Length: 159
Image (cartoon, rainbow, N blue to C red; front, side, top):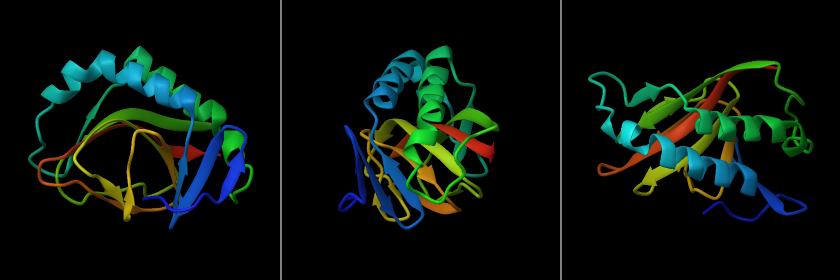
């Protein structure tokens, strides 16, 4: 559970735990659902890597719609936090995280879940489909033995 909201802004709730900001957004949520429907067959076919716990994929047009929705909302959503107010450049991609405990986000990262199998946590915070996440520093995903996390990621953010 994410706990109590730290701030209320109109129709969305920002919740913080540790170095993670969970953000509710109907725009991003619906765009992520559309992205998953477009790339599902490809993403589920990605093999588990021999080294590491993640396989990357190039985002589709609908994946970029979800990413762009989150990036567009960024200045509004971070107004109450001590984060940079704009994104000048970044790297965008899709990632399938396999069972294990991979470290992610060595710098500010936006993670948009598009499909979750099993109970996935991020530094103890349960990852769900109703939020996307601003991860402020290196964190650990915990993917159960029978689980996977399919996500769109914006990292290497330059502000």
